[in-house]
Length: 485
Image 1 (cartoon, helix red, strand yellow):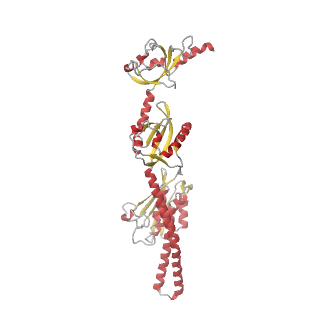
Image 2: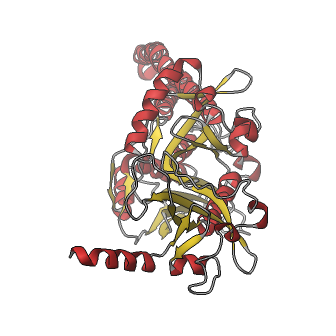
Image 3: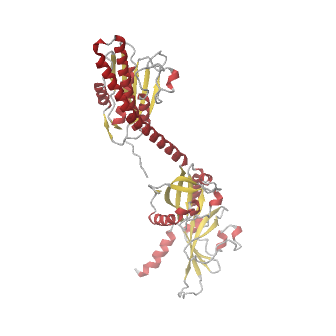
């Protein structure tokens, strides 16, 4: 086997996909494999005897910026440009290794020849140029950082969001974009991340901030992944400015908190005197007995009705406030059974004929908020029933990721002027409308929006009619999850 080794080695070099050359100390080519000759457009067997510099562009043939006959201590290739025999110039990597003389080479002795591996970087360069184009055109801020923590590339969006010019960031330490208090900890985290190299979101469970050029801080989300850039492993950081989202979240959280506090205060602070008023009315009614004039009895009954309406209003207000929290308990929902259950527990007026067209497959949904929204829409249709006989149609169909549910009635409809306000709190279709708190439709829309759906109104219905309304709910029919942190 020992005698076969040189032949096998020669065969391996000859069949290698990359170019291989042997160059003597005088820069003459002593041997070349077929891949090297093909790379430079040379005829088979014509490379030996030529000077290595003839494979370089004329500008590099004077020795300035050309091939240096020396090995890199870190094992890195020399980045040059090669020249094809027909004149095309292309990027190459050349890695040199010293070859011993025939009798061996003593440590520190003169090098008589060099083995040169030559790799065409054209395709890799095209890939990097394409990556850079995508990088610069991205609508998200992006950075490429080397393992020493220095920025090698920054796109326009990132630079603008932090108040810098893209070119000004190149070469700067990444820590310069972080508030001072985070820098020491950041260095340890990055070292740990480079060891694992897994793509992940940075700072889960913590609020991350970046440092603007003017010294202010802004909240960000950062995603990390490893990539090979310019032949070296580096870290790609995708950075999103979430300051607007954070502000909106804070405003929404504060609004929900204020609403809950108001609702609970209204419930607890008003229920007690309201019950006191109800008790007084009952005592007065008992004291007067049946001898009370008819007008007095009517007024006492009107007081009872207003007390009941105020009590319902407070219940509705609490329901609206609690609807600010999204449910997470998904289950399989049979829509036909769900609606029939609502109608059984909450019958509609006797003169209303109900038709159900709910032959859709069960789907994954949050049962309680969906049931509450449908109950409110059905109750709304029944409450506005203004004729001895009327019709109500509840139908559904699956469309993409949504289940479209329509509640269609032939009632008086909703005036165009009222449609803009009907889903707002304490608003009704008519200022003269009685018996409603103006919360039911607001609660329905709040529930639908909160759980990823949409609620729309079309009135009159069908189009061109003079009355009727169609409330359409588009409800997600697949389980969705929200990842925190």
